[in-house]
Amino acid sequence: MNKNQRNPGLKQFLWLAAILGILLLAQPQPAFSASRQNVTLLYFRVSAQGNGILLEWETGTELNTAGFRIERGSG
Image 1 (cartoon, rainbow, N blue to C red):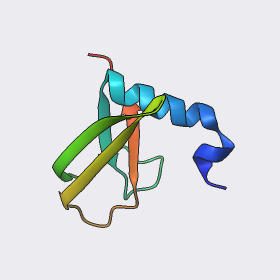
Image 2: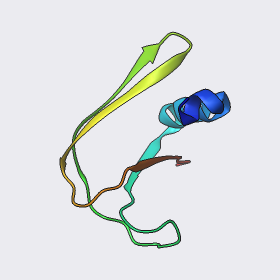
Image 3: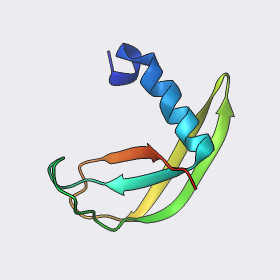
């Protein structure tokens, strides 16, 4: 069972975050670190999928990236 299956509210929050504006942050550092690494996006797509949306992206450059965190932005 993945994280979204255990917490469907998280999945809906991520969909909403994509609609309202997102910020992709590479996080090769521990969670308490404020530093960020540069990532070059080749493309970023958002498409309707039933009652939600699907986020798709591909990076061109990244180094030692453990993953991505999607955050909601306002403005």
